[in-house]
Image (cartoon, rainbow over all chains, first blue to last red; front, side, top):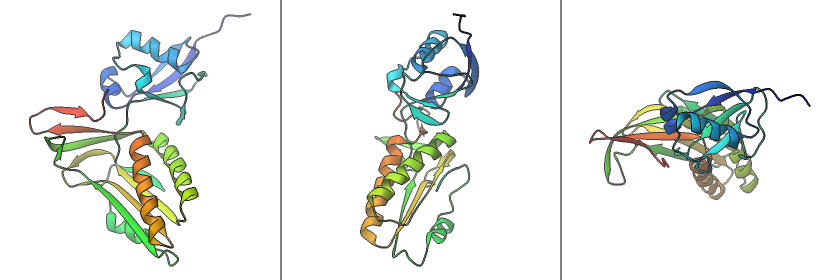
Length: 85
Length: 136
């Protein structure tokens, strides 16, 4: 079986996570299989203090479970606790 | 049905756009920026939102509300950007043949919006401090 190649994933950050990361979007190459694995990878790189369980996950502008597998060119948004209205 | 806007909300214009001959009731909710929160004096709010996701999620909220109540139309505009004290942050209008359903539906819309929509607000205080609400 040929080794899997890294996936290109587009990421969007908001609110306090955007401030922590220092940008509102980036594109990464990752071997992560799920959104959880991707967030853990980013946490190690950027020292995020917010655990993924506190966030919601959106893929291509719909909410999904954290264990959802991510695919090439997916747009992932990490959604901090909301405060609209 | 749902808009994130960086322009001031035209409450009167929105109200007029909702009126139809079949709607006996129009209930409007306006959320305004308060000058204090949890004992702290607020000078301004910065709102941020994820537009596409918010639109999609609001569509789901609207479907749920329309399943539950006999209403005609829902319209919502939420601000993003910097807001001053007194500014309208969110406008919700619901029309229905009768007032009971309009009141109940409008309440459900704002409650679900606050719980689910990807919108955030950062408060700025008179002591120079600031912070994102509900920050973990």
